[in-house]
Length: 199
Image (cartoon, rainbow, N blue to C red):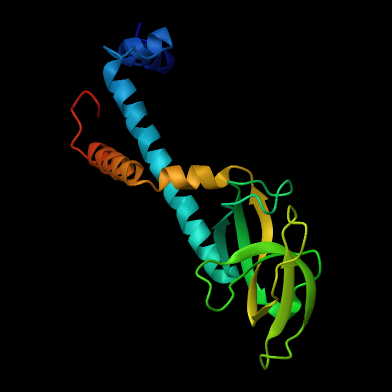
């Protein structure tokens, strides 16, 4: 008696079944080192990708909206903005400043800009087309001695306490050198030819 077509298909299917499918699970790889190295490689690439994306995003946003970073090296704005804070500012026409704003202004002849709170804004009577801005630090008992006759100002959007210390630490020559070496090492390692076991 010849076997039916259904019996033949069942036998063929049983003969082709591999141990992997028969047991319902895949055989475990020998040794965990290749998997660990591959995971570490992927983590390094992910960190580099995130860092690059954040840097690129900040560059685009800062150029589009005229943003920049400032640091507070003194306590003249304490306790509102303590020493060591990092601020993000946006450049605007000085005439758009309002009383109560915190702005960064550069007085002609002075080496460093000043970041204080605006207490007065009016058209300049001594410099044509400029705006006379009087400012005062929150921790100062009196306003700055002379007004600032300027065309533009950097308006403080928000500040981060102790942010300046982090930026200062990351921009030290030693940290920059270590970061460069780390990025170069991770990149070289990520694209180095892989061993057959890793593939």
